[in-house]
Structures are given as C-alpha cells and as structure tokens.
Image (cartoon, rainbow, N blue to C red):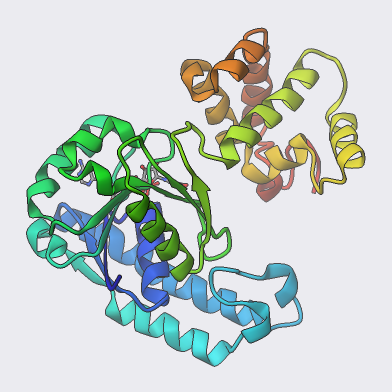
Length: 318
Ligand SMILES: NC(=O)c1ccc[n+]([C@@H]2O[C@H](COP(=O)([O-])OP(=O)(O)OC[C@H]3O[C@@H](n4cnc5c(N)ncnc54)[C@H](O)[C@@H]3O)[C@@H](O)[C@H]2O)c1
C-alpha cells in the first residue's frame, strides 16, 4: 500500500493521517468543506508539536515511563530520525476537498466521519463510484457495526472496521474487525497495514459491538461501580480486591479517574440507552444493575468538579 486516504479530519481522522504520514505513507485527508480545512489544519499543527514533545520526552531520563510505542521502539530509538519523520509527515500531508481526486489511486480509505448512521451512508454512497476497484475501505466507527454500511460501499468484500484508540502515537492498538462479507485477503491486508503504521493489530474475526477492549472493559468497570452504588463496599476496597486478587495494576475506580468522570458518565448513559452494546449474555447479567445510582454518583461528582485524575480529584485525591 502507498496511498492512504482518511475521510474526515476530526480528532481521530487527523491523528490517523499524521501517524500514517509519519510512517512514510502518501496521505491525503478528504474534507467536505473549506470550513473543515480551517478546523483540521490547526489539529495537524498541534499534532506536529505533540510528536516533537513526545520524542524529546522519550529522549530524556523520564523517557521510559512515557514511551510512545507508535513513534519508535526503545531498542532502535533514534531521536533525530524520528524528528525528521515528523517534519516529512507534516510537509507531506495533503488536504483535499474534491472526493474524486482524493479517491483516485487510493490503496486504502479510512472513513473517520461523524458517528452518525445517515452521514456515514451518504458518504459511502458518494464515494462508492469514485474508488478504484481494488481500494480497501475501512471504518473507524467506535459503536456502529460495518454490516450496517457494507451494502452502500460497492465493495462489501473489501470493507471492514479498523478501529483506533485516541492518542494513537502512544495508545497504539488497531482493532481490525470483519463483517460477514469481508474477504480474508482484505482482512489480512488491513492487519498488515495496521502493523506498518506501528499499531499493534488485533484481529476481531466477527462483528462485535465494543470490539475487544470495550467488550471487556465496560462490563468490568460497571461491575465495580455497581458494587459501590449498591453499598456493597467502598471504591478503595473494590480496587484492592481486583488488584491484589489478580495482580492487575489498577482497579475500576482508578481507571474511571484516568478516563475522566465526564466520559464515564456518558458511557453509563450510552449503555443504559443502548443495551445492545452488551452481548446477549451480559445484557441478561446486567439487567439488575443500578444504572440510576451510577448516574447519580457521576452527576454529583461532575457538579463538585471531581472530574478525575486530570482535575486533581475523582474517586481519589491526586
Ligand atoms: N474520538 C475518539 O476518541 C474516537 C476513537 C476511536 C474512534 N472514533 C471514531 O472516529 C470517527 C470520527 O470521530 P472523531 O472523534 O474524529 O469526530 P470529530 O467530530 O472530531 O470529527 C468528525 C469529522 O467528520 C466530518 N464530518 C462530519 N459530518 C460529516 C459528513 N456528513 N460528511 C463528511 N464529513 C463529515 C467533520 O467535519 C470532522 O472532520 C467516529 O466514527 C468515531 O466513533 C473516535
């Protein structure tokens, strides 16, 4: 693969584009309007500085504690080379408003437009006739399933999910998820591409809401929270039960504090509203969960400014 197109230059689109360019690909970001260019360019400027700062930190005595796996491996780290790659990525990234021009010659297109079914369908319908026959098409959607969109892409055999985590230069996982019609060739090609842009590619062989990480993490976090809101125990003891009992580095409330209470609150609201995000078995298990109590706890914390680790206080004081 050579030419990579990212559709959408929002939080994640700009990150994927910068990371792919950093790894030497020819990258174009397709944007739908002049206004989008005005919003995307500052994100790219900021990413350039973020990579530079990360490389300088990696090159300092605190480097190993702040290692960014998306930028370099510790045993072959060459700061000057990395900084050079950042400048090449920055000057090589192209922004394009013309969808046909962006799609021409694309080996892979990664859709990262707003998380909205109608917008994504409209985008795929416009793109389908413009793509070369061999182009692989991926969605970075966090909560929608690729089977919802396959029939609008004109290439269901070459369409699948490639789901990144936020801050991909350090949180470098790429969950690669097939839908029923995805070919093995396309799946393998996307796994290889993800590795080529320094992601740890994680195969998800069939559709699953929440992919791998959130399928495990969300039920785990909510199970801890449910113990607390029902008065079974306190956050510190629940965290200790998990950490000392399994050797894990953090318990659920320490994780909530790192994620941030606003995001945690939104997750609870979303899972309460769309129980389909849980697997059928988990849905049954979680029916008796005290979602009302969870929402009250988070609402109160937000009102009191206890927004998590970055705010100095969440469930714990920092
Ligand atoms: N933010 C995250 O942490 C995160 C993590 C993983 C995956 N994702 C997924 O990435 C995708 C984008 O999320 P984001 O956080 O970058 O959102 P964002 O709101 O920051 O960016 C959305 C981008 O899509 C463009 N857009 C919106 N509507 C459009 C339309 N109708 N046609 C074309 N372009 C349109 C916007 O101009 C913007 O460039 C979503 O599917 C989301 O689920 C987000």
